[in-house]
Amino acid sequence: MSEVSRVIPANEYQRSRWKNGLGWTREIVRVPDGDCWNWRLSIAEIERDSEFSIFPDIDRELVLVRGNGLRLRFADGEVSELPPPHGRFRFAGERAVAGELVDGTTHDFNLMWRRGLVETELLHRPLVGPMLFFVEPHTHWAIHLLSGQAEFDADSGLPPLWAGDTALLIGDAGRRRYALQGGGELLAIRIQELDQK
Image (cartoon, rainbow, N blue to C red; front, side, top):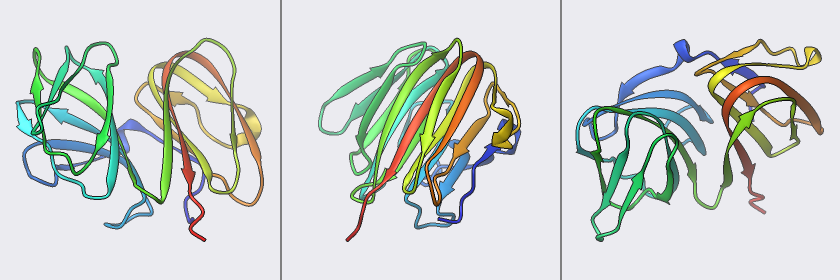
């Protein structure tokens, strides 16, 4: 993997149209870069009721990060709601689904990963003191700060995190510990690359 640990400030996210052209997203990162990514983080900006793009062979999880709620209405009849403050739902990218706004525009954190190549775990946690994250080959963390501010230990070489920023903690040759301190709320995403032997 060519990625290195770093902080991506919120003002550097790349805004682009959805694949189906019906909405906007702010892409945080895709790994590897290019069309054949294995995992991707973005924030969808949903301003009106609309169908979502279809992503074959991709699993995804949505987390409401701003707004009064989003309703997911699937073509097979299932309905799921993401209530404030941080409702969430995990589903297969092949499923046809439309997003319905409960009361006004929403911003929704969007984790996507390629089935069979990557496994993920998304945690929503308060940050009220030090938190430890361990990375090693094929195991990485993405830390998205929902609110507040935080900083890593000095020997990490990483700058502080402000609300809306995302830190990527990328495993390389050995095991490494990152200590994060501050106050606020965060999403912590553990990304495990599966052995393809």
